[in-house]
Every structure is written in structure tokens, then in C-alpha cells.
Image (cartoon, rainbow, N blue to C red):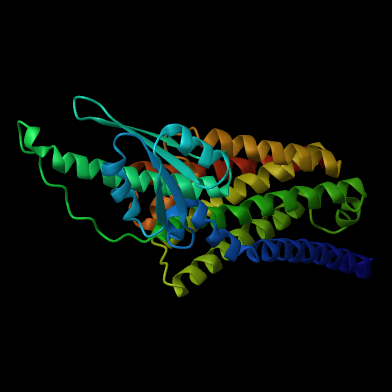
Length: 344
């Protein structure tokens, strides 16, 4: 009998190790797309691709002489002038130019510009960015030319500081993604593991051991909760090694551990109530999406709290999000143990 008990404990240990290895493999596969995620900065800030693509802009209208030189100043823009709108439109429809700027100067000196861009595509994003830059330059020039009409002298704008286009993407997209992705996966695998145990009736073999069902659930929860902040800490270490420091790392990891505890506790409670793997996974996925979607409606969502902590500008509401997540984590743990006691 003693030999049987030892074997069952080993079986339980092997199952926990198996699920941990599975979680690591899934997240390692996701990590393989890190270069792709960083490449998404060109979509988040398309201006980062300036110089890699030249936009052909057609200009027409009675204000062409004023607008065309400003548009041509951009390194990523080339200008073609047209005698009238009809000729410019025909060239655009034939694909001879990427975009149109139809400029009309009114009697009061105001210039109205109609911009025409192609339908939605990646090229459209680049074209729109270049058009916005050109029109912003033209607006500044017109303001300077008409400044003599001002009755009051406006304040000077502060000098522009050089900004890194990767900064906003890293702290508002990449860091929250790397922080909460392990939490999602841990909750999913926790629900799947326990549902599989119940579906295949192997949970009864584990209950031969001196461990009670709540203790078995605690063991699984500890493994899945601990792995998420550990992986997030590794991600932050990699970012720091690449010159992107994450401020307040301990508070961020506390928030990650709390969110992971909520998801793992909810997933295991769901698996105890719904022992079918497919149904429990489907319910967990929809539930997790609803929870995070609902959290996005809060005055400060968890992903914003992670971004503010990581960038080093937390506020009172940020600390409130961390404290509230810890309280929810304690409630999720108690709820999962209560469900385990009912099943036992």
C-alpha cells in the first residue's frame, strides 16, 4: 500500500511537470514572434518607415503653386502637377499617382485642400501619413505668411525634442502583452489540466494519496501561478538587456501574479463544475475575454496600470488597481478551494 501511495504521488508530480513544460513550450512558440511584434511598430507609428517608400502625389487646383513646393520638400514624396482636377483624377484612377491633393484658394485668402487616398491597405497607411505631414507643413507656412493679419502675437511653440518611435509601442503594447500573456496561458492550461483529470477519471487515482482534493488543486494552482510572474521577469530582463528598462518591476510582477491567480482560480473552478475539456476551454476563453473587455472600461485598466508602472509614472489609481487585483486574487483562490471541497 505504501508503494502504491508513492506511485500516485509521483504520477501527480509528473502531471504537474507535464503541464508546466507545455506552458513553457507554448510561450516559447509565442516568443518566436517577438521580432514580428517589434516590427509592428511600423504599423503603430508608420512614420518610422519614412524613406523606405516614396509616395507619388498629384497636385491640382488654383493654389498648386503654393502647395506643390511644400509637398515636394519631403524626402519620401514626389509631386506631379496637373492642369485641372479632371486630369489629376484620371491619373489617380490609372495608378500613375498614389494620392491627390486638390487645392483651391478662396477670395479671402484661405486655401482648402481635398486629399484623395487609395482604399484601405498597408500602402494607404503610408500614404496618409505622408499627406498629413505635407498638409501640416503647408499649414505652418500659411500661418507664417498670414501672421501680419493677427491682432495679437501668439506664444512661441516649445522646441521639438527628438522622440524614439519605439518608446510608445514598447511601453503601451509590448510590455503589457508580455506581462499578461503568461497569465492567460496559465489559466487556460490550469483549466484544461483539471478538466482532463476529471474527464479521464485520473483524478480519482490522485485522491488515493493522503492529499485531499483542495490540496491537489492548491498544488496545481501554485505551479501555474508561479510560472507567470517568473516568465514576465525574464521578459523584463531581456528588455533591460536591450536598453529598455522596466521601472517598478516588483509592483508589475505583483499585478501579474494577482491577475494570474484570478484566471487560474476561475479556470479551475470552472473545470470542477464543467468536467468536459472542450466546454471548459470554451467557457474559460469567453470568460477571460469578457473580463478583460470589461476591465478596459475601468478608469484605469490593468494594461494601462502596467504601462504606467513600467514607464515610471504611476498614480494613485495605479496603486489602487494593484491593490484591487490582489483582493480579487484572494477571492478567486477562496472560490476555487470552495469548489474543490464541494466536489470532494
